[in-house]
Length: 100
Image 1 (tube, rainbow, N blue to C red):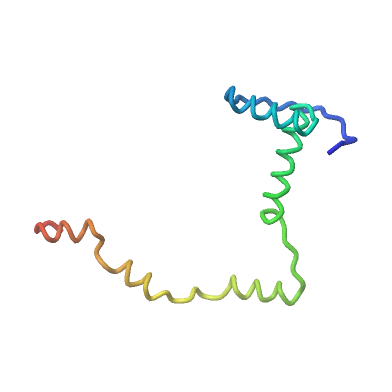
Image 2 (cartoon, rainbow, N blue to C red):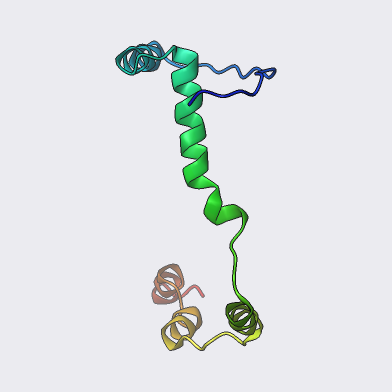
């Protein structure tokens, strides 16, 4: 991934000897410098990770549906309500021993 942008920032990181050897081997196989290989790999991973966490576009109809879903009261979940109202395993153990 050649870049025309001047690199002015530095990033240091500590890694194990095994990790360094792995990166060197992979960079050599890709015919890249270790720095270029690591930077390209990290940026590629960042580009995979960030899009769904930064922005998403909706048309007007979908935006209204999204807003309605956010504003709607939560749906009842009977199993969750039952779970929260039952004594826990620890509480049941204490009750069996006469300590509540």
